[in-house]
Image (cartoon, rainbow, N blue to C red; front, side):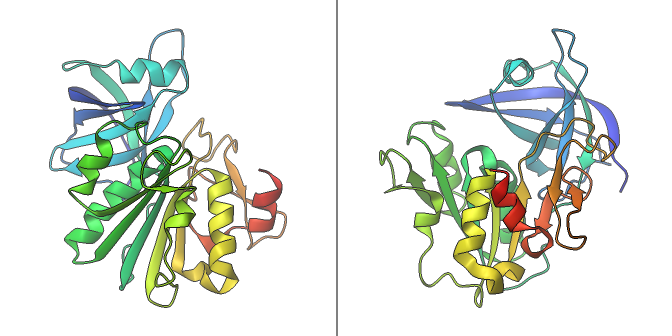
Length: 262
Protein backbone atom coordinates (compact mmCIF):
# COMPACT_ATOMS: atom_id res chain seq x y z
CA UNK A 1 0.00 0.00 0.00
CA UNK A 2 1.25 3.55 -0.67
CA UNK A 3 2.46 5.58 2.33
CA UNK A 4 0.07 8.00 3.97
CA UNK A 5 0.83 11.60 4.90
CA UNK A 6 -1.19 12.50 7.96
CA UNK A 7 -1.28 14.36 11.24
CA UNK A 8 -1.55 12.24 14.36
CA UNK A 9 -2.60 13.29 17.84
CA UNK A 10 -0.39 12.19 20.71
CA UNK A 11 -2.38 10.21 23.27
CA UNK A 12 0.30 9.34 25.80
CA UNK A 13 4.02 9.22 26.44
CA UNK A 14 5.58 6.46 28.52
CA UNK A 15 9.13 7.01 29.73
CA UNK A 16 11.48 4.04 30.05
CA UNK A 17 14.85 5.27 31.21
CA UNK A 18 16.83 6.34 28.15
CA UNK A 19 13.83 5.90 25.82
CA UNK A 20 10.22 6.99 25.57
CA UNK A 21 7.23 5.38 23.88
CA UNK A 22 5.20 8.02 22.05
CA UNK A 23 1.66 6.75 21.47
CA UNK A 24 -0.59 8.39 18.89
CA UNK A 25 -3.88 7.93 17.05
CA UNK A 26 -3.85 6.81 13.41
CA UNK A 27 -6.53 6.37 10.74
CA UNK A 28 -8.06 3.16 9.42
CA UNK A 29 -5.80 3.21 6.37
CA UNK A 30 -2.65 2.90 8.45
CA UNK A 31 -1.64 -0.77 8.37
CA UNK A 32 2.11 -1.27 8.90
CA UNK A 33 3.92 -4.57 8.59
CA UNK A 34 6.39 -5.44 11.34
CA UNK A 35 9.71 -3.87 10.39
CA UNK A 36 8.23 -0.96 8.46
CA UNK A 37 8.85 2.56 9.71
CA UNK A 38 7.29 6.00 9.85
CA UNK A 39 8.98 9.28 8.97
CA UNK A 40 8.18 11.97 11.54
CA UNK A 41 8.85 15.68 11.12
CA UNK A 42 10.50 16.61 14.42
CA UNK A 43 9.81 20.35 14.64
CA UNK A 44 11.68 23.23 16.14
CA UNK A 45 15.10 24.66 15.41
CA UNK A 46 14.45 24.96 11.67
CA UNK A 47 14.55 21.18 11.12
CA UNK A 48 13.09 20.09 7.80
CA UNK A 49 14.41 16.51 7.52
CA UNK A 50 12.17 13.81 8.90
CA UNK A 51 13.41 11.14 11.29
CA UNK A 52 12.67 7.42 10.79
CA UNK A 53 11.19 5.37 13.62
CA UNK A 54 10.22 1.70 13.53
CA UNK A 55 6.64 0.96 14.49
CA UNK A 56 6.71 -0.39 18.04
CA UNK A 57 3.00 -1.08 18.50
CA UNK A 58 -0.08 -0.98 16.31
CA UNK A 59 -3.55 -2.10 17.20
CA UNK A 60 -6.76 -0.67 15.83
CA UNK A 61 -6.44 3.08 15.56
CA UNK A 62 -3.47 3.36 17.94
CA UNK A 63 0.25 3.13 17.11
CA UNK A 64 3.50 4.02 18.83
CA UNK A 65 7.22 4.47 18.29
CA UNK A 66 10.08 3.98 20.72
CA UNK A 67 12.39 6.99 20.82
CA UNK A 68 15.92 7.17 22.19
CA UNK A 69 17.37 10.67 22.40
CA UNK A 70 20.43 11.08 20.18
CA UNK A 71 20.03 14.66 18.92
CA UNK A 72 17.76 17.65 18.67
CA UNK A 73 15.05 15.94 16.63
CA UNK A 74 14.67 12.94 18.92
CA UNK A 75 14.85 15.22 21.96
CA UNK A 76 11.90 17.19 20.55
CA UNK A 77 9.87 14.03 19.94
CA UNK A 78 10.58 12.62 23.41
CA UNK A 79 9.02 15.72 24.94
CA UNK A 80 5.67 15.48 23.16
CA UNK A 81 2.63 15.39 25.42
CA UNK A 82 -1.00 14.38 25.16
CA UNK A 83 -2.79 16.57 22.62
CA UNK A 84 0.31 17.49 20.60
CA UNK A 85 0.22 16.78 16.87
CA UNK A 86 2.76 14.88 14.79
CA UNK A 87 3.36 15.22 11.04
CA UNK A 88 3.86 11.64 9.83
CA UNK A 89 4.61 9.88 6.55
CA UNK A 90 4.24 6.12 6.45
CA UNK A 91 4.32 3.23 6.69
CA UNK A 92 7.49 3.05 4.62
CA UNK A 93 9.97 0.40 3.55
CA UNK A 94 9.87 -3.38 3.45
CA UNK A 95 8.90 -5.31 6.53
CA UNK A 96 9.59 -8.82 7.82
CA UNK A 97 8.34 -11.90 5.99
CA UNK A 98 6.06 -13.74 8.43
CA UNK A 99 5.33 -16.80 6.30
CA UNK A 100 7.97 -19.15 7.72
CA UNK A 101 7.08 -21.80 10.28
CA UNK A 102 9.05 -23.21 13.20
CA UNK A 103 10.37 -21.47 16.28
CA UNK A 104 11.28 -17.80 16.12
CA UNK A 105 14.33 -16.20 17.75
CA UNK A 106 14.43 -12.38 17.84
CA UNK A 107 17.79 -10.72 18.60
CA UNK A 108 17.72 -7.05 19.55
CA UNK A 109 20.60 -4.68 20.19
CA UNK A 110 19.54 -1.66 22.24
CA UNK A 111 16.77 0.37 20.62
CA UNK A 112 16.61 -2.33 17.94
CA UNK A 113 14.04 -3.97 20.20
CA UNK A 114 11.35 -1.67 18.75
CA UNK A 115 10.61 -3.42 15.42
CA UNK A 116 11.24 -6.84 16.94
CA UNK A 117 8.68 -6.36 19.70
CA UNK A 118 6.05 -5.52 17.10
CA UNK A 119 7.18 -8.50 15.04
CA UNK A 120 6.99 -10.77 18.07
CA UNK A 121 3.38 -9.78 18.74
CA UNK A 122 2.36 -10.59 15.19
CA UNK A 123 4.19 -13.93 15.21
CA UNK A 124 2.53 -14.83 18.52
CA UNK A 125 -0.90 -13.99 17.07
CA UNK A 126 -0.15 -16.46 14.28
CA UNK A 127 0.57 -19.19 16.83
CA UNK A 128 4.35 -19.02 16.64
CA UNK A 129 6.70 -19.69 19.55
CA UNK A 130 8.76 -16.54 20.11
CA UNK A 131 11.96 -16.02 22.11
CA UNK A 132 13.24 -12.45 22.45
CA UNK A 133 16.95 -11.97 23.16
CA UNK A 134 17.86 -8.38 24.06
CA UNK A 135 21.33 -6.94 24.56
CA UNK A 136 22.00 -3.57 26.19
CA UNK A 137 24.82 -1.67 27.87
CA UNK A 138 23.37 -1.50 31.40
CA UNK A 139 20.53 -3.27 33.16
CA UNK A 140 18.84 -0.03 34.15
CA UNK A 141 19.14 1.53 30.70
CA UNK A 142 15.53 0.97 29.59
CA UNK A 143 13.79 1.38 32.94
CA UNK A 144 10.76 -0.89 33.34
CA UNK A 145 10.45 -1.76 29.64
CA UNK A 146 12.13 -5.17 30.06
CA UNK A 147 9.54 -6.10 32.69
CA UNK A 148 6.76 -5.02 30.34
CA UNK A 149 8.12 -7.03 27.42
CA UNK A 150 8.83 -9.97 29.73
CA UNK A 151 5.07 -10.27 30.26
CA UNK A 152 4.61 -10.70 26.50
CA UNK A 153 7.55 -12.86 25.47
CA UNK A 154 10.08 -15.41 26.61
CA UNK A 155 12.64 -12.66 27.24
CA UNK A 156 16.36 -13.07 27.94
CA UNK A 157 18.71 -10.14 28.57
CA UNK A 158 22.45 -9.63 28.22
CA UNK A 159 24.28 -6.55 29.49
CA UNK A 160 27.76 -5.32 28.65
CA UNK A 161 28.45 -4.47 32.30
CA UNK A 162 26.93 -7.68 33.69
CA UNK A 163 24.44 -5.80 35.84
CA UNK A 164 21.46 -7.78 34.55
CA UNK A 165 21.03 -11.13 32.85
CA UNK A 166 24.08 -12.60 31.18
CA UNK A 167 27.27 -10.57 30.88
CA UNK A 168 28.28 -9.87 27.29
CA UNK A 169 26.47 -9.26 24.02
CA UNK A 170 23.12 -10.53 22.83
CA UNK A 171 24.91 -13.31 20.96
CA UNK A 172 25.86 -14.83 24.32
CA UNK A 173 22.16 -15.68 24.74
CA UNK A 174 22.04 -18.00 21.74
CA UNK A 175 21.82 -21.59 22.93
CA UNK A 176 23.14 -24.65 21.04
CA UNK A 177 19.53 -25.74 20.48
CA UNK A 178 18.82 -22.61 18.44
CA UNK A 179 19.91 -23.81 15.01
CA UNK A 180 18.98 -22.70 11.48
CA UNK A 181 17.47 -26.12 10.90
CA UNK A 182 14.79 -25.69 13.56
CA UNK A 183 14.61 -21.93 14.17
CA UNK A 184 14.05 -18.76 12.18
CA UNK A 185 16.11 -15.73 13.21
CA UNK A 186 15.29 -12.03 13.08
CA UNK A 187 17.66 -9.28 14.19
CA UNK A 188 17.91 -5.52 14.55
CA UNK A 189 20.82 -3.63 16.02
CA UNK A 190 24.18 -2.02 15.26
CA UNK A 191 25.98 -3.17 12.11
CA UNK A 192 28.73 -4.80 14.19
CA UNK A 193 26.13 -6.95 15.95
CA UNK A 194 24.56 -8.05 12.67
CA UNK A 195 27.95 -8.92 11.19
CA UNK A 196 28.85 -10.99 14.25
CA UNK A 197 25.51 -12.80 14.04
CA UNK A 198 26.01 -13.75 10.39
CA UNK A 199 29.45 -15.12 11.27
CA UNK A 200 27.88 -17.13 14.07
CA UNK A 201 25.19 -18.63 11.84
CA UNK A 202 27.63 -19.21 8.95
CA UNK A 203 26.80 -18.96 5.27
CA UNK A 204 24.57 -22.03 5.41
CA UNK A 205 22.42 -20.39 8.06
CA UNK A 206 21.84 -17.07 6.29
CA UNK A 207 18.59 -18.18 4.57
CA UNK A 208 17.04 -18.53 8.04
CA UNK A 209 17.92 -14.93 9.04
CA UNK A 210 16.20 -11.62 8.35
CA UNK A 211 17.82 -8.39 9.50
CA UNK A 212 16.52 -4.86 9.98
CA UNK A 213 19.42 -2.47 9.37
CA UNK A 214 19.92 0.78 11.27
CA UNK A 215 20.93 3.44 8.75
CA UNK A 216 20.44 7.20 8.47
CA UNK A 217 17.38 7.72 6.25
CA UNK A 218 16.95 11.30 5.05
CA UNK A 219 14.27 11.04 2.36
CA UNK A 220 12.70 7.71 3.32
CA UNK A 221 11.87 6.98 -0.34
CA UNK A 222 15.18 5.87 -1.86
CA UNK A 223 15.77 9.11 -3.77
CA UNK A 224 18.78 10.55 -1.94
CA UNK A 225 20.71 7.24 -1.74
CA UNK A 226 22.12 8.25 1.63
CA UNK A 227 21.25 4.98 3.37
CA UNK A 228 22.67 2.36 1.02
CA UNK A 229 23.97 -1.04 2.09
CA UNK A 230 26.17 -3.37 -0.01
CA UNK A 231 24.29 -5.99 -1.99
CA UNK A 232 25.24 -9.46 -3.23
CA UNK A 233 23.10 -9.56 -6.37
CA UNK A 234 25.09 -6.85 -8.13
CA UNK A 235 28.76 -7.14 -7.07
CA UNK A 236 29.92 -3.74 -5.91
CA UNK A 237 26.34 -2.49 -5.95
CA UNK A 238 24.06 -1.26 -3.23
CA UNK A 239 20.46 -1.32 -2.01
CA UNK A 240 18.63 1.58 -0.35
CA UNK A 241 17.77 0.71 3.24
CA UNK A 242 14.68 2.93 3.26
CA UNK A 243 13.13 1.61 0.05
CA UNK A 244 14.56 -1.90 -0.48
CA UNK A 245 14.66 -2.50 3.29
CA UNK A 246 15.08 -1.74 6.11
CA UNK A 247 14.41 -5.47 6.41
CA UNK A 248 16.57 -7.74 4.25
CA UNK A 249 17.09 -11.43 4.01
CA UNK A 250 20.65 -11.89 5.24
CA UNK A 251 21.67 -13.62 2.00
CA UNK A 252 20.83 -10.42 0.05
CA UNK A 253 23.63 -8.42 1.68
CA UNK A 254 27.37 -8.51 1.12
CA UNK A 255 28.60 -9.14 4.65
CA UNK A 256 32.27 -8.86 3.75
CA UNK A 257 31.73 -5.27 2.65
CA UNK A 258 29.36 -4.70 5.59
CA UNK A 259 32.23 -5.71 7.89
CA UNK A 260 34.72 -3.43 6.13
CA UNK A 261 32.52 -0.40 6.77
CA UNK A 262 32.24 -0.87 10.53
